[in-house]
Image 1: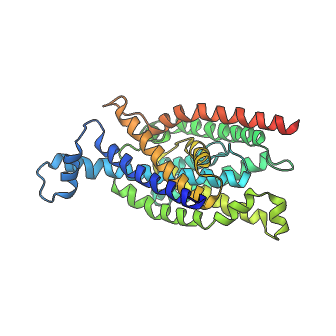
Image 2: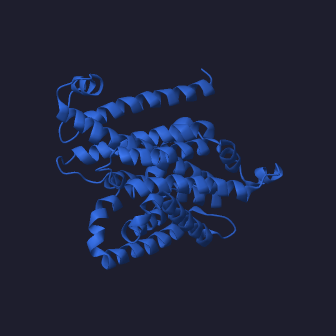
Length: 336
């Protein structure tokens, strides 16, 4: 079996796994249903159990579709940011994109609710500004992983203080978005699905057009310059799509961290660094991870739900510390 065939097979099996996990997630919740009941509710026209049909069609399926799209979006954003910075520690959360998008969306929801239709665009712009600020602070004859992390911590701390100030100034209005701030998919319906779907399709298609640019950046600036390519422009294109994918995700479900960090690293270990395969595989793997996290969030302490963002933080923090330790060890070896 050739390497190309092997990678295509991995993508195919990941799609099959995603389908099975999605069906499994539909089955579980505060009330569990059998597969036969689910099939009847979904495909039998005059099925008598209207409550079951309502739970599936109005609550679980829209919520899972949102999780699929957001998980894929955040994973793709992580891959693109890592390609820009050639840094395995880059992700929308650490580079300030998520925090910038959440503060922008929060301002719209609380201060300018009449502009709610523009929240996706506002979140995208907020994330792009925060990411640009992190890059500006971290730049010193290039981008080093540790400087990016420290700059990201500083920007995230500043944006966190802005969120805290809004908690004080708008204490009455902000109670309704506390769950959203922690990255919750609770209460998502078909309106949210239709709202994020066209943006997600555009973001995924746009990301796949950047395969060649991402692969070239991975080879190093000198190689790209020798080919006569405009490196800043290529980095800017990847950053714009990464911020766009993050912005539309944060605008719909709030802050869900570490998907863009954990998933691309796992995908790279399994399928390699060629973005032709890494991008679609990461999107599928991101969808799987977030669907699983959301399933855990609504079943672990059922009937009480915890936000999926908290579940991802529990998974992601140890993984981030492992990556940080590994990266610093590699830097020491290179230094020697």
